[in-house]
Structures are given as structure tokens and as C-alpha cells.
Amino acid sequence: MSQDAPGARPRVGLFATCLMNAMRPNIGFASAKLLEDAGCEVIVPPTQTCCGQPANNSGDADGARALARQVIAAFEGFDYVVGPSGSCMATIRHDYPELFADLADWRARAEALAAKSYELLSFLTDVMGVTEVDARYDGAVTYHDSCSGLRSLGIKGQPRQLLASVRGLELREMADTEVCCGFGGTFCVKYPEISEKLADDKLANATATEATTLLGGDLGCLLHLAGRIQRRGLPVKVYHTAEVLAGLADGPGLGEAPEGGR
Image (cartoon, helix red, strand yellow):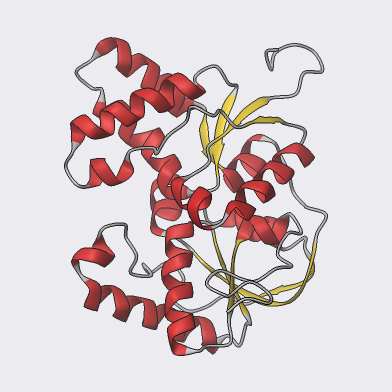
């Protein structure tokens, strides 16, 4: 059913990122709940793959194009493509048309998909007009602006607007929240000492707020910071923002052992 049909719900293809699948499926459940609460029909295409960002960033354009073709074919039939990741969705929106710049047929399909692809929280607020959520989270939180979400997609006010509606939640802004956390995809592998220093600087700013929870919209950044938190024994929990907005942040945070586990 097309979104244009009277009374039809938008058909949203949920882009399940590699990190989410492997490390934190709860973010996918939270994303689906938020989209359904906003009135969308949510489908997770089983043929989807990695968006190709790691290959593209490493100079493997042929490998990135092969993955992009599969993503385009899996999602082009939906009204929208939505994912809980600024970096993956920025790849689809900005890099796919460039990857196929010299291939007219695929370029048109890549541009069409890019035009209807969104990061989760920007889609909820900017497209669906969501201004509040029905959720509760007791405690003070601070928010990290990821580089891809902020600089490539302009995501800044959207998560803050929705977090302001969560009952019991107090948002405390940290200093330099727009500065990179040091993850940067392959950057953290190529330059581990710089990456670690950036993470520690970020955590110094986060803990200075005395917030007990750190939130963000890109799982790569959050895993990077959660790893440093666990190694240093800091009393800070880490969640993807979608988990809090969906009321699904009641389990262990990122990097924490499951209850009853080691």
C-alpha cells in the first residue's frame, strides 16, 4: 500500500545496522516500537546487508558498490528507509550517489533511495512530527553528539526535543559535546593512542556533569565509550537514545555484564 493512499501508514524499511545486530539488538526493538508508536508500518527486509561504509572508508569502492546494490534492491520499494545510526544513514544518503556517479541506471536508484533515507530520531521529529514520547527514565543523563549524525545529517535538536518529554529524565549538557569521541570507524584502529585520549577527554566532560547515564545515537561511539568506562571503572551507564525513548533501558547498559552473568 502506498503512503499516498488515504489512511495508509507509511511503510518503513528498518535498516538493522551490523553493530546493532551483533552487539545490541535491543536498539532494533526500541526503534521498531518508536516507529510503530508514530504510526508507521515497520518491516525488516531479510536480504539487507552492511551499508558498505567500512569498505568505502577503506578505499574498496568495488566492495562498497556491491553492498550498496544489495541495500538499494532490498529497500527501494519502501516509502522510507530508517536506521538508528547517523553513520550508516549518512552513507546511504551521501555516499551511495557518489559511488554510482558514473553508472546512470544505478545512480538514479541510489539517489531515489538517498532521498527517502533517514536516521531514526530525525525521521520521527522532522518527517513524522513526533514531539514527545511516552516513557520514563529516572536520573540525570548527558548526550554525546556523534560526528556523522551532527555533521553529515544535522542531528542536534531532535534527540534533545524527544528526551525533554521523558518523565523523570534530566539532561545535563557536557562541555565539548560536539567533539569526536575518538571512535571514527577505522580511525580507532589506525590511531589507538589518539582515540583513547579523545575518549578519556569525552568521559572527563561527561562525568563533570555528574550525570549517571551517557546517551548517543551511534552505536560505534557508544561501544567505544562504554569500553573505556568499563576499563576505568566509572559509575556511568551507557544506552542508545532510542532505548530510553522507547522505555527499553531497564536492563544492563552497554558494556555491562548481563544480570547474573560475569
